[in-house]
Length: 94
Length: 333
Image (cartoon, rainbow over all chains, first blue to last red; front, top):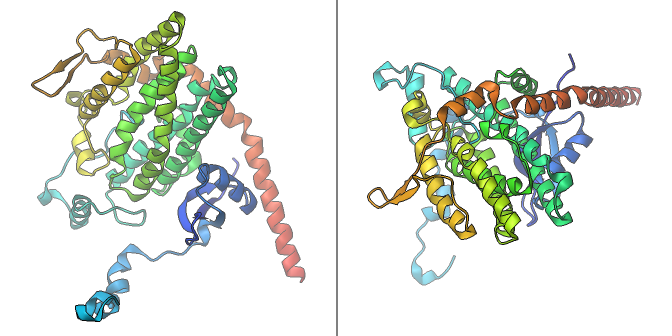
């Protein structure tokens, strides 16, 4: 019984200077093949100019159960949004 | 539809009172159109049904390469060959997106492959019909990809996040497939008498198998209520089939081809076409394994899996060796 190729998460930077974005995953024996496979699977229509691959087991994620306590501190801080402040129309664009 | 006969796990839709607290929270999120993500709590039956559905969908994409791959070497021009090659490559990509979505539910790629090769998991019945000539490649793109799109567009809104994201990618790429098929049909239908005859013949043979892609009639799909409640099915089989017929009729008319159904006519009252159902006993027979190409398709997949074993193992051994060498060098430094 052979062992399965590890799973890689694929991140691609699009044409317009945006950050790398997660696009999906794939199996590959090593990082070199992961990049080659990602080229074939996720950039068949010029979707990107740069590829990152990360083996899935190296990614740590926040857990859904912690969602409440984890994000609660920002809920009460509405002043972090510009719309919190009323600027008189006479001041012009700000 | 690519996943056309998925048995929904569980005993049917539960009332609110019958649901546990977890189940209620889950159903509330689905009802509010929130996506369910891999680490979120979900009912076991939801998970099991999704593995079946996404797995079947992925298998269909992979097996679906075979009828079209059959004509790559015999495409009439170099351009048509390059286009068909790109389309078949897309299907491989679609299979991979979907396998990865299924894997987020806790099943491995090898398990899914083995389920297909042992016949325990199915793929769409349509791919058990042969592609006898070049006109069939046109008809497959036009009708089969057309039916697939009809099914996949609503699935972009499905409740399971990874499945929904895979569908969004797939739908973006899929309309090229249908257009290239229709382009072939236009060429054939506007060609010589012999070409026109081939186009009509392809439509005659593939019409009913395409209607079967949406799965059995609603009155025979006993489990769909639960899948609809979970939003892993968005429309019923008959709704999608009707939409497909209504969309395809004017396209056939433009080509000057006749849909092989005497009962096909516009029903003013319903605002839709009346049409004949496909032969459902043929459908169930093909699903059981008795279609014209079932054995051939499975043998091809089994051969590919077995012949590829040394490549999979060899590349893994090479990667392990390389990693060990790197580790030894880091330790020596």
